[in-house]
Image (cartoon, rainbow, N blue to C red):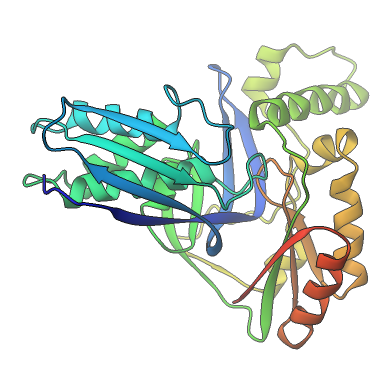
Length: 309
């Protein structure tokens, strides 16, 4: 692989326009049906240096101080790619500058991993085929294969089923609000399971066990059924009905989710949903009102971003 004095890789984020949990598998993984939309901002920056005279390995530092330098999505991506590739791995030094808020449901760690995987593959004299690279990405994290696509996708299963999608929302902007609260994704799914079990017991005389829930799924979702579509076009009718199945459980512990939701509605958003496991919240708003609403929400003390759809 070539040597670079210093290479800068930009990693954008994603938001979920609705998240439907379709079932819980016997191994405990949650299968979902969601529309993932990539955003250019907020973004992370990876400063990468190849060390041609050093032994193979990866050294990572992060300006935020929250990253475990020995065990993170970048080290996992590096190990997974080197294991799949027939060529000797390069020695790398990476400085990660975090612009994507952690614990916001925006997939920052997955995006960082995908950026590194793309670079490793394009720098490889014998690159992996796209399907092979996607297989490597899935072993790093459920959202990583999506970030290799660079376009909206309908995402199903645990992230391995990707279908290109389009978004048709003319004269609409997406307004992203990021509170300071950090929310653990595993915690959010556990909170969902606990709330789902409570709701099932209220409508069924049986005290369902977790294994029974895993077999039957849950009934918390109201996201439109799009299972018969070969490709999916997200339109206003879907936006008006979108719902994140995790949001109710997360908002019970983190009331800021409801506070941001109410603020977005007050400033003109006509559809609002939490992204991923939170804490970021997405509002869809008329394009001519977006910047005024953004200024007001920024004045409320939150990080905000606008993207025209």
